[in-house]
Amino acid sequence: MRVLGFIFSVLLFAVVLSFKLLADAVENSRIHTRNNSEIMLLNKKIESLVSQVNKLKDLSPKKFPKVKELSYLSKKRILVTGGAGFVASHLVDRLMSQGHEVTVVDNFFTGSKKNIEHWIGHKNFELIRHDIINPLYVEVDQIYHLASPASPPHYMFNPVKTIKTNTIGTINMLGLARRVGARVLIASTSEVYGNPLVHPQNEDYWGHVNPIGPRSCYDEGKRVAESLSYAYAKQENVEVRVARIFNTYGPRMHLNDGRVVSNFIQQALQNHTITIYGSGKQTRSFQYVSDLVDGLILLMNSNYSLPINLGNPEEYTIEQFASVIKDIVGGVSPIVKQTGVQDDPQRRKPDIKRAKLYLGWSPKVPLNVGLKETIKYFENELIKENAKEISLKDD
Image (spheres, rainbow, N blue to C red):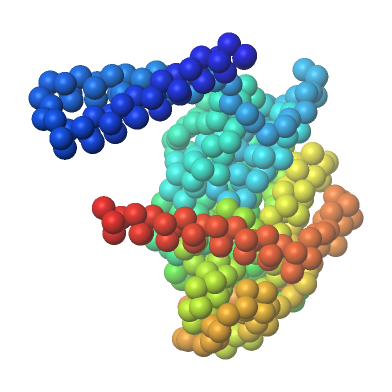
């Protein structure tokens, strides 16, 4: 380590010195004419030194977040589909920090490599670029199946792809679980309840879903994924867990994913109009991503196999939620209502008695605390986006 550090320092000094020489050469060229061969030779030397520094960086050990050391018996091999996405990347962080071996598979349709790049190169981590509508052959003990677009603009952008991911992709993951004897957790959704006629929604409610509406590719795709899970459990003895996930927010949400949290935060930060679609009286319940990750891990390692709601039972109207975000962010954004969207659920609140009873789980992060962390993330992302735009204009 000390030798590498010394070599790196020497090379870095050499590069700096070479750039100084180049600067001097350029300055001198204003007074003394240099021929092209001299300038080309100097440029080649600098390129060679830069190449050596880059190679040394590749050889230098990367600093990773801290992880536990587990025994052979305690360490699990865990596959996370869609692992570069918003929720799944936080799950990967937790599983890695616990000391497990984690394989992420993602086709990067909505996921981002930057969400998991801090683990690339770690001995316990593997990243596979792959679309799960095609079979995958790996040896694992647990499968967290989170692959699927989850925001309306994303899953409605390519509805056929969304259906395939939640049907064919789920069949492939259940088939993999059967072959290797793994337990699989299916990330379902509160959307299986559709525009509910029961409030709050408990797991015994069958839902009120439009099977041919614009959201059906996601709603029905997840309903089929649940049906497939229990068919494999009954017929093939596959161990399945089903999490019905309610609205979740936090860092790493996509800036333009079209969800109410990201829309409102982005609009408020830029002093744009905060847009409410519909009356604003429709309700949602928002849980912070770390609470959801807690619930997913507890469910995976529990002995309970029926569907479980994971969400925050604190209910807000969309109007109230817009005002909460505006108050935290500040600014002068007006709140304006526009025409509602088709099949938008009017009330959404989870009954979490089952999660409390069988998992000992309930959300812990207060809304104002979680929103402040999320807003901080969005502020940084917007600064980066603005810097890119300025750079492109300058070019």
